[in-house]
Image (cartoon, rainbow over all chains, first blue to last red; front, side):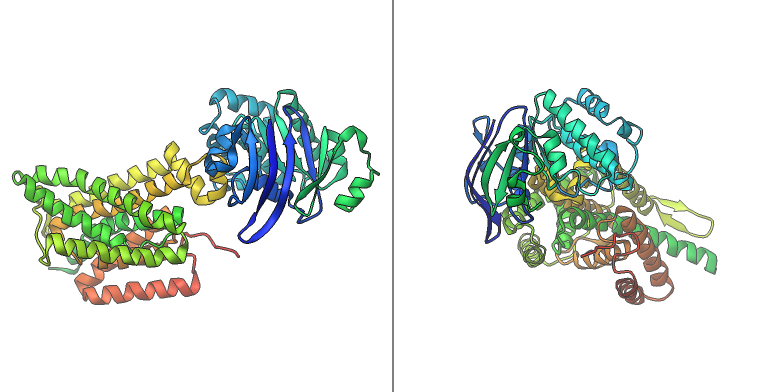
Length: 231
Length: 294
């Protein structure tokens, strides 16, 4: 579905990703783990076309999206929930969702389906998004991305700073999305949420994919977590 | 004339200034708010609108109202198209870098001025008002055209507010203003938004110029004062704030009218500039602007 081959990318003159290879299969949850600075966020940003192209290929269903302008990437069905949410803070909940809907979604049908996943947002449609609680903001960040009706959803540390009940809700949502055929790429630092949802885990080290494991082969004491994440 | 009617006259003159200033400054504020570009060429777009109005009214001839009405439609569109072209040829290639675009728009200002000097000449030329009647008040008569300018500016400002706050285009513009990168991550073609905003900002300056040119005459250097006053307004109101721009335009326009009538226009400009200095010292983000944290 999404195949990344020999990807080199970075910021300005600083190269962060070095010949990274990775593939994402349909309707799977692929967790990406690694130490701080390993290149996890850079990988997601490179997929979204937010970094200057260096070399390598990112092929989505036969199209090399590395050659496309950044605004065309989400139109092909890639949704992005960045680290720190980055909502359009001065817009209302409804307006944040509308941004996604007018690009790719199917209007009211998509909106209703997304709000069924996050019914709490339905009561807050007119509220300015930066006044929501942290958990609600994360719900909105995911809801906004789902308004694009993505084939692949990229989530960058969605559980960061959230209480356990909210982390469970996000886990449930991710599993529910997989049931509908959406592939998920989940960047996460903590072992428990990863093992709770992952089909496969990719370990990133110094900008390259060092190892990919089936989640069923891992447990909380697996040596990979110690080696690549330091936990 | 007694003090009361004299003050009323000064306030009415101030309202005319404020109305035109609000349109001009709103264009500047929009461009900065969405694109983070300090557009020094904004005064040149104002001038092009006025000079264009002279060409259109000369070409149409009689009746003056027809020429003026055509100018009010053609000039903002033409100036907007020129601005969109300048955006594509210059600003986009500089990747909208804040410092580089200041220098580039200074260059554009001189290019447009010299083009106007070459094609239009150095003379100030009058543009006939579309109608001339006086509204007779108990104390004095007042130009009906000036009152129409206030009304027309209010209608355009309301239209801009509606576009920004009640339309999909406005939503896209506001999202781009808040976070350019995330706007792209949601499929918004930021380059196209920037071109549209730059054209819209220039078009607003051109509307203001067409409205005021029957009162002021068209001249190739006439963009300087509106540019200075627009910067004063957006700094006081808060760069990128529509509400702040309107409030500051009213404040500066009315004070300009009153001080000019009672004392002198020069004193009005001195006080306005002093006000800017005070705002920059005590509230750098302007009256309604957001505090930028680093």
